[in-house]
Length: 171
Image (tube, rainbow, N blue to C red; front, side, top):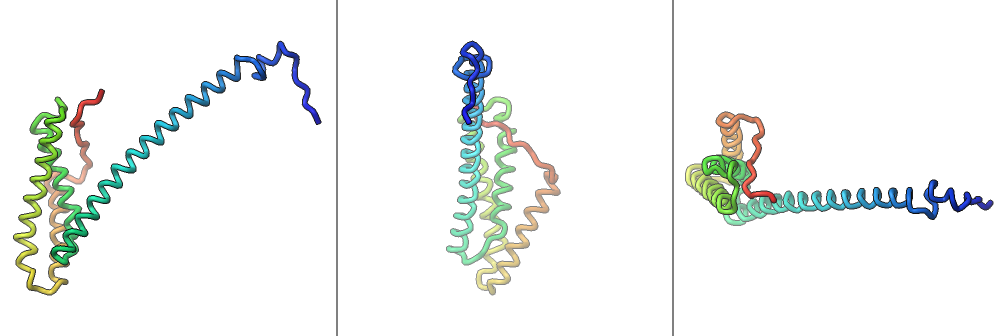
């Protein structure tokens, strides 16, 4: 069955061969496609950044287990405390009010140094005395250190989420 086309003067109004409705539909579809591609790009960036954090955590677990033969359950908690070091150093430097690349680098260094010092203290006080003991003793100690850091952070800083300030200027 053939469909009969309307006369030429009516084609523009129904979007067949004219420039009116077809172009509007095409522009709307292209605009939607551009928005969808922008959203896809943002999801890709978020996924890569989150995957990088997971890879960094896994690398840390692997290195600690490879060197000490200890599963350090407090590993993620040291990362949490490092994030708090970064948060408080950003606020102390005023990076939340005047963001800059130099302040962002200083916050990163402060966070890394704070985490390293905490790791050193944990290793000296909790893990080193247990090196000659059975592995289960060190494993239970690692779980205890994890609980201590988690619950200590909740007592000191509250369990409420905090927003990390913007450290770099957006254009």
